[in-house]
Image (cartoon, rainbow over all chains, first blue to last red):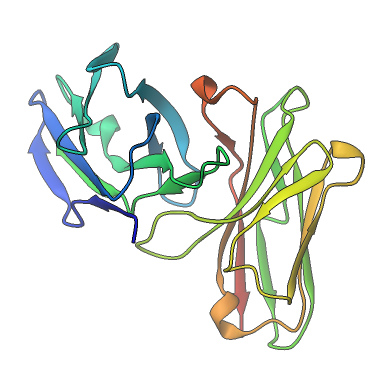
Length: 112
Length: 114
């Protein structure tokens, strides 16, 4: 079966460090992968999309990589701040209908 | 446009009652999605519309669930004969057909079935 795996344990880091979150998927070859941020009690917010032919994408302090051989995406936040504390979700179109399947998300906690 | 609006924000209902949620998407978006999210899980896909046509439904969507999008504008999600297992956050999202822009989610409707 198709699966998306994100580290279920919370990631605790100190302010100013780089946070790296992992998204692994199985039994599928997506054309693109998306990352979202979700704060408690709110809906997810779209951050970045990376396509299968792109190795890396950047947006301000965010960087996403996509390795289709390893079936893995890495999400980096450089110079992390306490305001970056949230749950980060990766999502793929596994249906072929342009509807997203989400991972469970990884909670990031940035301490001052 | 103030984004995707969902109403109500919270709903507490007794088991066996029917509930209806409303979603008002971003007006320029032609796609509308319903997801369900429980604690510690990612959003789970329920159904999606392109304009007024319902194009895909998840197997999670039992016959107690029905969604409509009349005239391709707002959408409603109805749950009949609610069960305690229906307690969750129900999220609506809208998007353009081009995936490059991602989904815009509403803040959700928190349903508690007692």
